[in-house]
Image 1 (cartoon, each protein chain N blue to C red):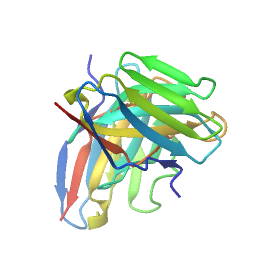
Image 2 (tube, each protein chain N blue to C red; image 1 turned 90 degrees about the vertical axis):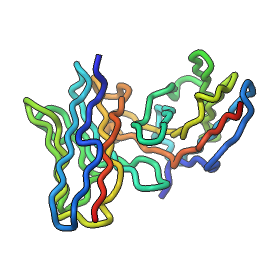
Image 3 (tube, rainbow over the protein chains, first blue to last red; image 1 turned 30 degrees about the horizontal axis):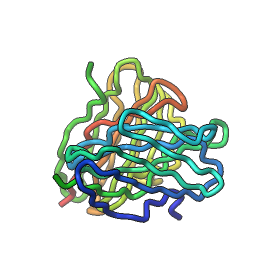
Length: 115
Length: 113
């Protein structure tokens, strides 16, 4: 039962353009969402997060949008740079008291930014 | 300012041997989480510990796997009598408190021959 879904295994964009990575979730108890970036042979690196009380959070070139009614979130990277090439994981967490602190991850989207 | 440290980075074991994976959380972090990643998959939660306590082990296989986070020293994930299906990348994360961001270590890649 995949509670967090990243339906695009890969995405290729040109340097300088926008990268949009998508994530859907099924569990309405999730109230905190995170994006991690992962290079080969390294651990995931935290990028940006958003609480369910917000619909947008921005940090430099990275913006995460949350649409609670559609149970959908997206990560926008503008402008994309070759160093952004990595696997991006969407993760979700449940409310305290509604479960533990475990993160539920999607399978990841491999982003390639071409020079 | 060291991040989450894991060792060894690579571990090779034969079937039936024991594997011990170590994790030292970031300074000031008292919450530790273990995740496993199989090839082409996302990370799957295994266990959540605070000092000397297992808080949630709902993702741990019932047999052969155990975890601890003693008062002193690193957290240990122990796999007894390893089988080929245990081959995976095992990641440790730490956080300062509940519902705080989890920061990941570089992982231990376990290969069972």
